[in-house]
Length: 160
Image (cartoon, rainbow, N blue to C red):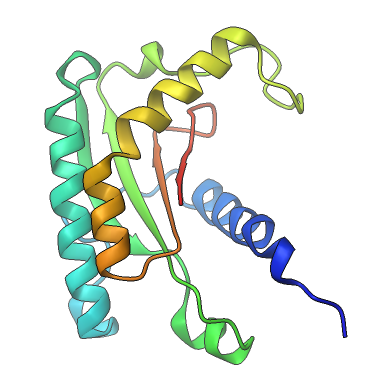
C-alpha cells in the first residue's frame, strides 16, 4: 500500500485552490458563510473563533482597507469521512476596497513568483497567519486555514 501522508498538504492545497477559484465571484455573508443548520456545533464554534480572528486581521490592516466577509469549512465532512480522511480545512474570505497593494502582477502562471509578487505573498501570509490564528487552529484541531480576497490574481495565505 502506498503511503499518501506526505501528499496530504498538496491534496489540501489543490482542493482549496479549486474551491477558492470557483467561488471568487461569490461573496459570503459577514461572519459566517455557511448556514448554521448545515454544520456541526464544533464547526460552528471554530467558525465563530475564526471570524473573530478575521475581523481582527481586517481591523489591523487599515492601510489595505480590508473587509472580513466570513469563515467557512473548506471540506465537506461527509466527503472527507467517505475518503477515510480526518483533517480539517477552513477558509477565511476578505474583500478590499483597494487591492492593488497586494495584487499580483506579471506572469501569474509561472511556477516561480517575481520578487515583487513574492513580497506581496509574504505580506499577506504574515498578516493572516498570526499567533492568534495558530491558537484557534490548535484549540479546534484545524489542520489548514486559507485566506483569500478579491480575484484569482490576489495572494492566498496558507496557515498550518
